[in-house]
Image (cartoon, rainbow, N blue to C red; front, side, top):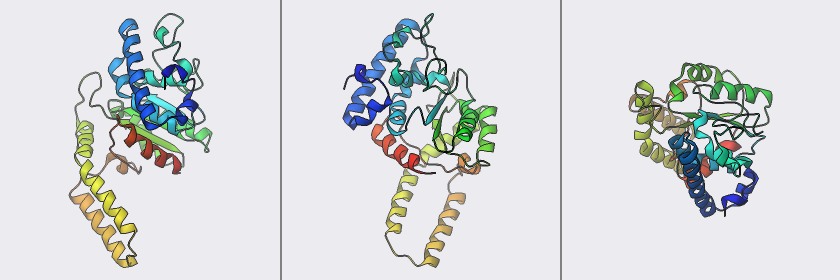
Length: 264
């Protein structure tokens, strides 16, 4: 599959996993070639290639809205949404913007030049239409912005189809510092435990446990979670947390995004 044949995200839905993985390589080559000539944000967009592919393969964009925070991550998103032929004009006069821009494409619901705006913008978009999914892609640097934390504080008060993806690459303008960085590292540290726990749950669901015994197991899980494992900040905000997953593996991303899209 050649990148030149991708006119819109609809074309992605017909592709096999190996074809999508091959497309990821072509996307990286085009981003490197264009940014090498025009300047721009290289690392953040290269790191989000598979994520952009997976989102547009699984979700029904532009009906399902995707808000990128910050817009530095969105070059693959631009190429996949009908702007591939014009991508060489990136950041040139009368060319493509270096950030998502609604004046440029229906696939860009919001302008996102700087960090911290995605979750609050996505909340508003989700409120407009309850029948669509809204995805906010938040970099780990943007996660610590006051505006992001304020939005997370308000998300649980509203019944909306909102999915927040934290793209943790351990970098902002410089390597991240502080409590949120430590917390994200702890989540990754507990990745193997979480996978083990998920497998055990899968086994238990196939066994006709007596209700009282199953309740005891759930209480023990709660004790383990709160005494041995650090609580997820996202669960503190009354948000369901799933992960972490390898953001550069389509065979990890595609199944989990399909699962999340099916949930209310």
